[in-house]
Image: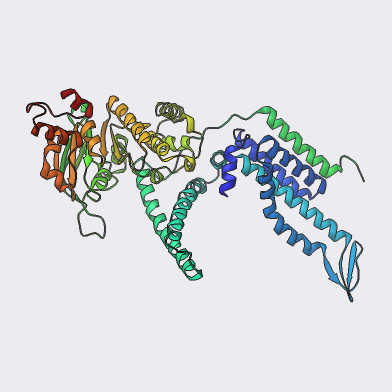
Length: 259
Length: 279
C-alpha cells in the first residue's frame, strides 16, 4: 500500500490527466472480464506492462513483485479447476497413482488458462491505475463524476490519516521494542494489545484536534477544495478509444483470424 | 471605521473549564491587544495559552466573561462565528492535526473556499500564497512526504490565504531545526509588514524578547504580566512564577553594569548586536 503510493508519485505518467487514466483502466478492465478471451487478456497484459514499466518508469522488478502477490491466490484457484482426481483418465493429461488418476480435461485446462489470463490482465489494469495515478487525483476525478460527497470526504480523510497513524504506530512499536516489548511471545502479544489501544485513543484525540483546526477555518460540514487538473489530451483519448475498439474487434470477430 | 479602533482583541474576565475537569483552564483572564502588534505569549505547559487561542476564534466558548474582536463581542451564531474565524486564524502547533488533505493545493484552498469566494479568485489566491511562502518546490508532494518545516509552511499558508486580521501561531518553532525556525521567523516578519496582528506562543524567551512589541506571561489560566519585553523581562518575580529565565542579553547587560564595564544609564539592548554596540 505504502509502496504503491510512493511509486505513484514517482511515475512519469503521474501528470497525465487522471480522468483519462481512470477511463482507460476501467474500460479495459470491463472488456477483459466480459470477453474472457485469452487473446484480449494477453494483449491487455502486455500493453499495461509497457505503459507502467516503459512509459511510467516503474522499476520492472517492483512491478513483477507486485504481480506476484495475486499470483499465489490465482495458482491455488485455477489448480482446483484444471486438476481432478478420478478413477477414469480425462482427455488432457493423466498421471496414474495406483488405482487413481490425477487428471484434467481439455475444457478444464482451457478454462483454467482463460481464468488465469483474464485475472492477470484485470490486475494489470488496476496496477496501471494505482501505480501511475496519485490518490488525490483519483479523488478529484470522483468529484467530477459526482460521486456522493460523503464517500469522497471519507476517502480523503482516511487516505491522509493512514499515513499519520502508521507513523504513530511505527513510533510506538520502536519505543516498545527498545524496552524489550518483543522479548518473547507473551510480551509480544501484550505489546501488540497496548499498541492497539494506544492507537485507538490517539486516533480519537487526533480527530478532535483535526475537527477544531477545520472549524477554525470555517468548516461548515462539507469539505470543498480546489483540485488542480492536467488538461486532457485529444491525442491520448483517441489512442484509448482506438485501443478499446481493437479489443472489441478481437473479442467479437476473432480478429486477427487464426486457428 | 472599525479599522480605526485601537484594540483588535479585548478580553474581559474570561474563564473556561474543560468538561470533566475540576481545574479551570482559564481563570478570569483580562487582556487587550493593539492592532498590528507582535505579541508573544509565554508560560509553562498547561498555563492556558492554547485554550485561550481556541477561545479567540470561537472554537471554545468561555463559561464566563466576554471576548471582543474589532470592538464587537463574539456572536456565537453560525454567521457570527464565520465572521470571527475569518478575522482570527490559528496555525496549530502540530501540523499533522491541521493538514487534512494529502494534496498541498487542496489543503490550502479549503479555508478560502469556505469564505464563499468564487473558484477563479480562490485559485489565484492559493497560487499567490504558494509562491509567497515559497511552497512551489514541494507543492506536488503529498503531505506525508513533507518535512516538519515544510508542513509548517503549508499550515501557515492555510491561514494566510484567508487574509486574517489576527494570526495566532501556537509554538511555530516546536520540533523545527534552526534553519526552518529562521524561515518561520522570516515569514512571521512578513506577516507583520502586511499589518497582520501576530500572537505567538513560544518558549524561547530570547526570541520573544528580541521580536515582540509586547510579552504576555500566563500562569494557571491568568495573565500575570503584560507589557513591553523590557518591562516583563525585568520583572524577576513574574518570570519566576512562569518558570522562565531572563533573556541572556539582558542578563549579560545587567552583569556588565554591575561590574562597571558599561555606564549605568544605557538603554538595555534587545539583541546581541545592540549590546556589542554599547560596548
